[in-house]
Length: 168
Image (cartoon, one colour):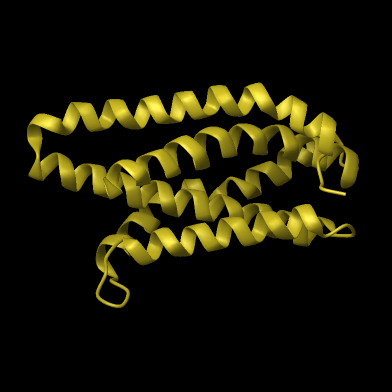
């Protein structure tokens, strides 16, 4: 059950709901709080998305470097702490400058990428040990991501309208 819970947490909550709400909130944040022009916002979004580009490096790290005897659990915890801390910093800090905001958003993106690659490794490992369930595991991952995105995009406009791009 811990595997299924991890799939719901990473693909459903983090990538589904989190990315959907985050995309909408980040666009309002860059426009309303940071007062960026669209071209500058896209430039900084490219920096924020850079941890996804180096996803194979995260995969090698989680496969090769065990922490305290564990191969994947510490990386899940690290990813969650990085993501939650960075988003709390952005939402609660009222006078955050451009560079700290970009760094915090990049840290959140790194947390999501680390969690994603760690779960991908678990799916691959479980597909090898349980071949008849491989297709079901992939379907569960896709379902959680799609359902989470549907919920996230459905509520993102309401959340940004009621709270703004930052909690006040």
